[in-house]
Length: 473
Image 1 (tube, rainbow, N blue to C red):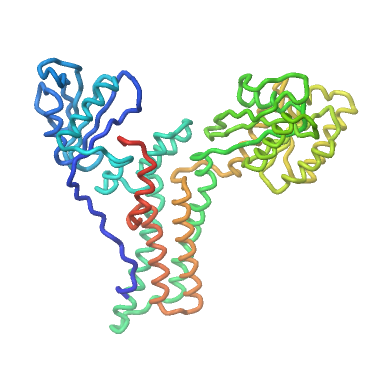
Image 2 (image 1 turned 135 degrees about the vertical axis):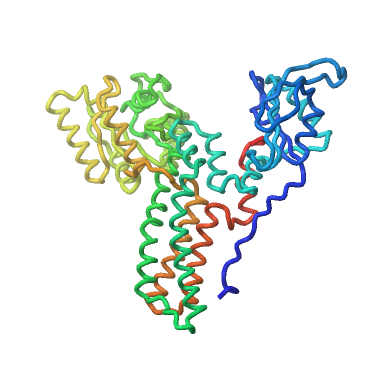
């Protein structure tokens, strides 16, 4: 059977060159950092600055940055920290020079480092070296990028959890159980002729069945992990003067969109990003949908329809003081199979029996298309809290927050592949296929789980992942 097992490549951690980059964002700041990593980091750093004490692992040292033209003239003061291999972020010698955040000084330090034998780091190369040296697995490396790019506290917390190995820990017992089953079948094949019992079909079925639910739960975690990671877009649509812009301002919690009593005030899309319980949500206020001969308004309505088509969530705003028109009925019918929500706005004005009947009519119409409806008042704020809760429920699909979520498509696809291979193994066992063939499916499952953490991930996938990092990280 050994010739049929997928090869698990060894990851080489041999570092032969030294890289350098500015690790802080472009522009001026209080502090700027130049990073070096590689075997010549310490010797290059010693030539970049005038040290006042010898370098020592994990100790900060005060140093002078000297003027290039006047070598005795101090240009800046810096703090230099040395991390000796293998006890560093990258696994090899690492130097961080923290000077004042002048782009001129940082550029000078970087150019000198390059002239002394370092090369400019590629995007994400410091983290890539951490991965190659075994300091991080691939899910943790991806979390480094996610933390840098986080726009909400929830995103930062999720990234920090992944950096701490939450996803890896969730996968580890699955891999362990899978390896044990593979070893059991291998032993039965290798020693079956020596009176060692071949593993019974029922035992194989029990072990495979125990792996399917946790894999399914892991795959399902992508529903929430994806929206926390990427966020969603919600288009606010409806007839002119239904209160779309007023509701938009209420959700944004500031006067972002212009509001007047004149129908058709909004002519173009107005967008704003908010955080809804930590989930990034881009709101799109659109022009009112109606038939018009005015060219500019027609262009705005066309953009509204495009925003409606592109949005992950649709919020239809109905006017509680007006009966449903043909455009609104068509709109409800068009989004009945999408993630949609109805806000019956101006409910504060609907106090008389006739207006109450209109609200009930609106609710019934939404109910007919299985779309949740919430009475609201953008003027008084009534119903806004309930509306937020409904939007959040719609966005998350009711999925609860939990550690170790799948956060990107690459991760999700590895679990989909693992589940498919495990299902193949289950069917093969039911039909009494030889154990050699069942093992092929089990090894495919193992390969998929290994590729999640990076143990078997092809180089082109690694390159794609790390080139999305910023330079210096």
